Length: 143
Image (cartoon, rainbow, N blue to C red; front, side, top):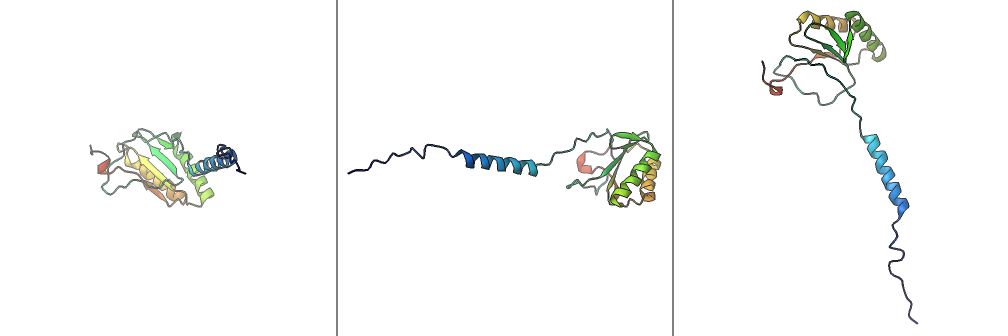
């Protein structure tokens, strides 16, 4: 007596549960692995050139202080007075014990005294990790 085997009856169905599990795991992986970039509005500042400037490869959490060509201070893109800047640096020291890096971006046409005032505020508030940004000659031609 011959036995008939139906070929393809079980194999024609797609296993949906493992497929859903796999897609769900991939979704979770990409949600966790993807870093959402913070929208950062930059002010139109022309940084001076420096021969040893290097691009930032890893962007740590930092406070960005901008100075425009007229000497106005900005914390990020929010205008601030020197007193408000001093308070913000003091609060940053309280929360991070001076470990919060401060990036100072000054327009090259800005008088140097405004840059010195921000550096002085950093020192008064025990913020030791501060630096002034410049452009490298490879970023563009010097004026």
